[in-house]
Image (cartoon, rainbow, N blue to C red; front, side, top):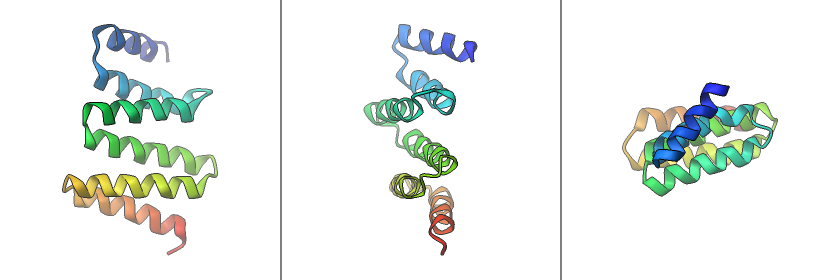
Length: 107
């Protein structure tokens, strides 16, 4: 974990917001304030206009929510994820998100 924290410090120091977001996404599940850290990472992806990473981050966030028993919030994150993948024409990834939604919804 220390290497991730060092990487985060470096990315922040040089202004690499994509590197910062990727590192935060990796750290989030292990953080005491995981939802906040996921939120920061997702906000950074949006700020730099990286729709793929934003969708990927939402998918990982949904997996975290599922593990926490927050099914409704996970479905909402997966719906956003699916829509972002569709917007950038990654239909296979959108289908995977939809499959996860269907499984969580009991469909």
